[in-house]
Structures are given as C-alpha cells and as structure tokens.
Amino acid sequence: MSALNPRFRQALQAALERYETPFYAYDLTSIQARVSAFRAAFPQAELFFAMKANPRLGILRRLLGLGVFLEAVSLGEVRRAYAAGFKRKEVLLNGPLKTPAMLAELKEIGVPILGLDSLPDAERVARHLPGSHVILRVNPDLPVLTHDHLATGRGESKFGILPQDIRQALKIARAGDLDVLGLHVHLGSALERVEDFHAGYALMERLYQEHGPFEVLNLGGGFGLGLDLTRLAPEALGLAERLGVELWLEPGRYLVAEAGVLVTRTWGFKRTRRKFLLVDAGMSHLLRPMLYGAQHPVEPLYKGGALQSFDLAGPACESGDILAKDLTLPTPKEGDALAILQAGAYGSSMSSNYLDTPRPLELLWTGEEWEVLRQRQSWESLLLEEQAEG
Image (cartoon, rainbow, N blue to C red; front, side, top):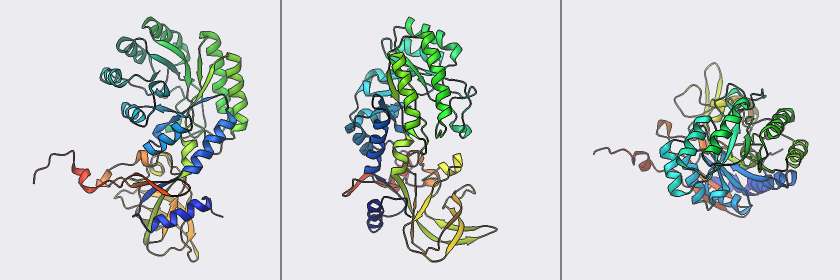
C-alpha cells in the first residue's frame, strides 16, 4: 500500500514529465493537516515553527497564514523570516552564540525575541541590546533516548544554562534591563517517548516555582513523527495552567517531514561484495542518512518486476553516500523514479554544493497545481562569488 497521498503521488508522476531529477516536492495539504493536528492537541499554545527544518519562503508564508510563528537559530534565518512577512514579536531567535556584529545588525533590521543560551550570551545582549524581550534556555541535564547528535538536553550538550546557573543568568539579564519572558527547554529531536518530555516538564515546574513568576513557558520541540500528541498534551497544558503562563511550543520536523519527498531516478545496478542501485540523488541533496544514520522509507513511482534487495547509492565520490541499505523494491528499469519519503525536514535545508553539486529544484503541490518554491541552482551561480579570470 502506498504511503503517499494518492493525489500527491499522481501529481508526482506528472511532475516527472516536466522536471529533471533530483527534485524536492512538498504536499501542502499534509502540512496543513499536521498544523491542524497540533492545534487540536494544544489549543492554547503559541506555535513557533523551527524554520531550520524547512526554510522555503513559500512554506513560511503559508504557515504565517495559518497563524504559526517562527523559531530561528541564525541571523540569516531572522532576515528570511522578515522577508516572509513575519513581525519582530513573531520570531524567536535561539542559538548558542550571538556576536556583537550580529546584535548590531539585529538593531538595524529589528530585534526579535531573543533566546539566551549562556551567561556570556546574556551579558552580551544586555550590553548591546538593553530592553530586549528575552527567554532563557535551560539545559535540563536529563538523559533522553535519541541519536547523540540530537540529544540537546543532556548535561554534556553545548546548549542551554544548567539549572544551578539560572539564578545568575536572571540577575545578569535583569541588571541589563532585559525583559525576561520566561524559561525555555528543548530536550532534543526525534523524541518518541512521552516519559522523556514529562521528565523535562517536572524540572521546569520546579524552576518556575523557584525563580518565577514568568509570563511564558517554552517547552520547545523535538516531537518524533510517531509521538502520540494526545498523550503528551494534557501534561503540558496542565503545567501551563498551574503556573499561569502562556505555553509556547517549537514543532519543526513534525510539521513538514512527511509532507516532503526527494524524487530521484535509477541508473542501473552495480555489484561489489554488495549490490547497489545507482541513483542521481545523493548526500549533497540528502545528508541525514550519512550524518545521523537516518532511515528514510523509499517508494517506487513505477511498476517493476520481481523484488530485489540492494543499497541505494548516490553519485558522490564518498563511501558514505548511501541513502538506504538493504532496500527491497520491484526491479526498476533505467530511468525509473523513486520517492524518498519523510524528506520535508532537514533535507533541502542541509543540502550543499559539495562536489560542485547544484542545489535541486523544489516544488510545492497545492492540491491543485505545482508551484516552484526554488529553481534548480544554475551552474553559473556556483562560480558567481569567485573572482575567477578567463
């Protein structure tokens, strides 16, 4: 049975007749459904989409129309958020480092809500941008079940302020005339266990009782695609009600991952001690399998022959350029297409020009027609910033 929405799958077949692979394609109706599901589970919460998951302007503008705000983690993302039409109070800038140059530019273009990640971060913001609205990120020093690179709430992570340092951070912020809205915790990404979230919530309740009152409680994101929001929501909503605060959440991958696919064509088999199916998408287009060992489902967009198992190998001159291992699919012909699923988050946003690979075309299916979100990068643009002679 197809995991793709039948109408979206049909639209992909039509797109293959018009556009060169590889390309990203997103189903807007899936994003809208995910936002609706989130709002149904957390009706009182303010949602800040973690835009690093997918920063395409066409998607951000749709989210703005749905009343979703943005969480940024770089100066470039703040500029992109403003370009998409978001106002300063609709953007939260997190991240472990805000340099004086960055803060000076924010002063010029408009200061968003600032997430303070350390004592030096608080001191710098107080010195350069007094009067700013800020929120303090807590490192809860808790174990969570996820990939090491995604476990931002462990004590050894570079993120956040340890609980014992919150009092000093508040002292610095308030002495610098910063408006502290509340505290923020983000345990990690791709979390599937409700228990991990509940442990973080218990810590935040203790910190609010010790250091409050505050206006806002930011419980972050990290919602795994299979997480049952109906089991999680009552505890989060109950905590916000007990503390008398506004609840903020930062869904990212949860809203967009399943809406997106990376479409690639097959170009034959190769055998060493393993059997490979060669495709025209690789690590320059989708880095997550190599970086995190992420496993993306793959769906054929063709009717093939007998089932075979193989590894899906990209074109990069790198041994790690394998998009899937031990994949079983109907035998394809040269030029048949595959859809790599759950690619709507951290696919395009992590793509690179490694090996002078142009970033791919990106399309949005509105439910009625295709909209080009970003053109395929031109060969000329790869050299544009280098002053080469001849």
